Each structure stands twice: as C-alpha cells, then as structure tokens.
Image 1 (cartoon, one colour):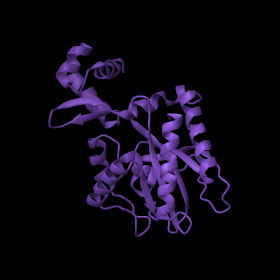
Image 2: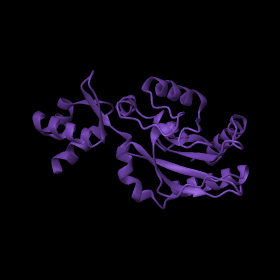
Image 3: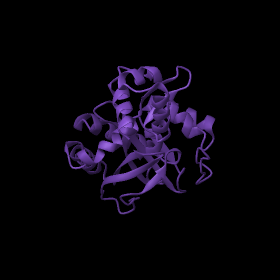
Length: 239
C-alpha cells in the first residue's frame, strides 16, 4: 500500500505525463512493481494512460478524494451563492451536480418561485449523456475519459436521448463551442434543461449548474436567455 502512494506522489509531482520508467526512478521502486501499481491505479480511475506514448498522468478524479476536506469551505459557499443568485434572477430552481465516476450526483440546489418546476432531490444520480449538466461536464473531460465513456452501453430514456457515439461526439463539440449544454426532452418527455460547466481552481470541470422545467415554458429561446444569466453569474461570483 505504501508503494502505491509513492507511485501516486511521483506521478503528481511530475511536470507532465510520465512513463513507467520515469515513475519508477522518481519513486525509487522496481519497474515491474511500478508498472503493476500504475495499471491498478489507472483501473481504479485515478490515472489516465496514453497508450500511444506509454505515459501516465493524474486523472481529475483524484480531486474527489479531497472533497470532504473542502465540503464546508469557501468553494461550497461560492456554489451556494451562485445558485441563490441565479435562482433569484431567473425565478427558476437551480441545481449543482458533480462528477462521480461515470455519473453526476446532485449536491446543492436553490429553489425558485415557479409553481410548476422540476426539483430533483439532493443525491440524485444521472448518466452523463442523458442530461444537460452531464453533457456540460463530459464535454470538458480528458479525451481518454470521453473515449472510454463512449464504449459503454448508453441507455436511451426517450426517443431524443443521444446514445449514438458519433452523434454524442458532435454534441459534445457543440457544448464546448457554446459554453453550455441543452437537454431537449432527452431524459424525460416534456422536460427541457440547460447547464453551464463550473471549473475548479485548477481549471478542471468537475461540476455544473443546471435549470430544468416544462418544455412549454423552457423553450429554446428561454433556455438561451437562462444560459446567458447563468454564465454571467459564474463569471461574477467566480465559482
């Protein structure tokens, strides 16, 4: 177990992607042992492996291990402030979801004033390809993460769910270009959503804010208005 931590620390301390030989030298371990440790940690989801260059690098999922340390800190408060400000400006219930493995988990929310609203419960988990916030997060993950996700058997929730890998790739490209993601009845018929990704202090996207509601009220035009407000608040509060 101690050797595994030495391997992780060596990769984390590197200036960039490292080969198994480089990690072994930095950690003071045998190459065979180091390579076995690297592949095990990669399998657990905490390292990315580039098969072409035969190198390893820390995966953003490593940051989830520190999440409990910061759970009640300034980052959580900034998210709460962001949700409250967005909800007050839009009148809509606003949710914050985080990346958890290959799903999102809803961790914070601010209730709006709309009588007809979609109010997901704290702890709700969703697949990345089927929601606006999931796509907003997935679009900004490392290429290896996205490619691995595309190999999964993606569930179809409605006839609008984007489960085809080629179509999903195109959708994620649009998300990166637009700066937000839409969900037009892809998770549930009659429900539209929009989400904006949130970057942490290191520039990684680990979460996003979203607004969901009935499709007859949240039209494409209205969703674009909401998206602009959400992006404005993200910039203003600096979440």
